[in-house]
Image 1 (cartoon, rainbow, N blue to C red):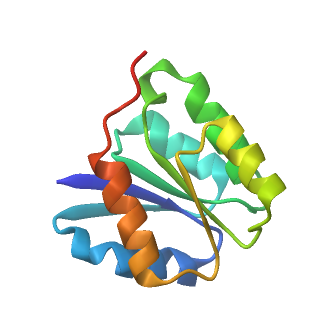
Image 2 (cartoon, rainbow, N blue to C red):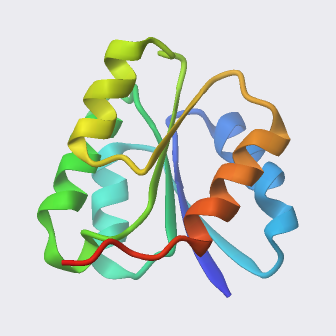
Amino acid sequence: MNKVLIVDDSKLMREMVAACLQPLGEVEFVFAETGLEAIERLALAGFDLVVLDLDMPDLGGLEVTEFVRAQDRLRGLPILIVTTRGDAESRARLMGAGASSFLAKPFEPQAILAQARQLLHAEPPSA
């Protein structure tokens, strides 16, 4: 069973992402409303994928991504950033920080599902 952490300050968006990812099969969804809450959850449990909003009130997706990539235990964890900022500069900054993939809002349900499937089945980077 895959375990997916969905991080977004919008409850509706968290629920929508989970609904889009239901076709993955047996998945346990865990939700976090803030970047700090995401870091707490990541410290306490293992996950197979993080779907992360970029703009949040405390720590944003960029800071959470940088935190994850700085942790040996989490370094290979796939991170899918979803954001309203679809510009090339934001994409380059996030990918440079270690995001695995990037999807601009609004997105098609099939697009996020395809990204999640790809990330869940990708080989982890070698250390």
